[in-house]
Length: 341
Image (cartoon, rainbow, N blue to C red; front, side):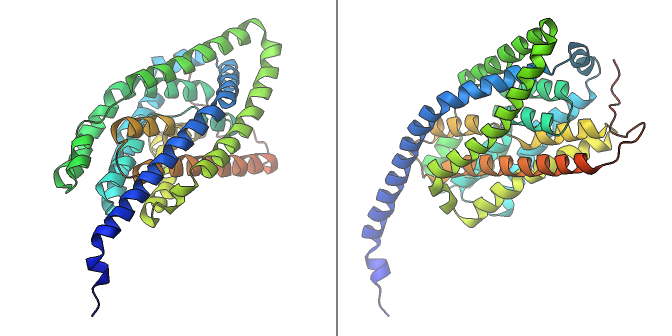
């Protein structure tokens, strides 16, 4: 029996190291390109958040805080169930520690602004959608480190890779990025609310422009991410499967839990979308700060998740719009909100 595979192990190791360095450098280059592309995308997102602010009714927004049942359900889904789902999937698919930690970090992230656009296109409760996005971003300051501390010990204690274990036990939470995300939500939304109150007719036009831009930007983000990080599709079948089903699980558990506490279908849809959509940019930032010298497989997962959370979300939006187009209007429709001011 020939033993070339064993005797060539130093050469194989060098090739593996070179490939990892090359993949990591590609990720750095892609990050630079994405930063360039993000300039026009940021402008479009700013317009979207202003338009979302134009849809907010302050009385209804305050009603959600006075009776925070829906908000509480959303936060339980976001910071209670999503990290647990990520942990369960990582264990079930027996992921390597590096990939498992990437999945866990993604599951511990707050919601993203993409959910606001999807909620609008599915006639969701925009006051709840906006308040959930803002609240989850604020609560992420405390709940993200807590979730990572609770669940990451499985891999930090069992990992044979001491470097992975060391980095995982000292994950850097980018509070500055979270703070900037919060400012990027509150300021344009507040501006949109002011515009709607002072110029209601003009605000309707802004909403139309913003929502069209929102639908377009979702497609652009998915395409750009797929092209720049095309190497992520070679991350391995288990990681790819998790990236496909994890957003679906998030959408499903959000809808079911909201239904169990007898929320309206409008609120159920809103909570479902807010649960399934995670802040992928925050996840990739944490990985870049905490694991920049590790295998590139860690960087693949957030981009896979981003693509499929957008893909699934657009499918839901399309299905709802088709249903809405052909449904027969009825008096006392069951979709009327149960929340009273």
